[in-house]
Picture (cartoon, rainbow, N blue to C red):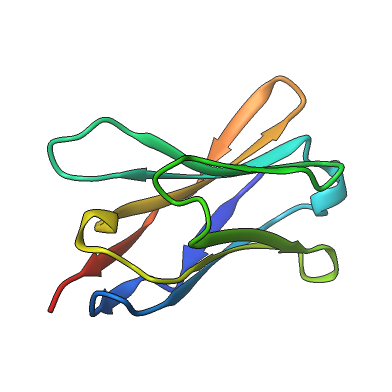
Length: 115
C-alpha cells in the first residue's frame, strides 16, 4: 500500500509561482513512475508531468517550459514547480505513483490562478 499526500496549493496571481509537494509513504526508489495530473472544472483529467524511476521526465505541451517535476529520494517526496502560472492552470492537482501492477493516487490540492 502506498499513500500519497499533496500539499502546496493555493491562490496565486497570474504570472506567479507555486511549488506542490507529494509525500510518499514508501521509498521512492520502489516506485516505477510518478506523475502529476490535474482536473479542471468542466474538463477531462490531464496528465501534466511524469518522472520515471531513471529520472526521465516528460511534460504536456500546455505546461512545457513553465513546470518542472522533481523528487527528493531522501525525503520520499515529489515536487511540481509551477512558474508563469495562467488562469487556465486552475485545477485540482493530483500526484500518482505506479508500483508493481497498481496505481496510487493522492487526494489532490487545489490551485487557483486569479487576479
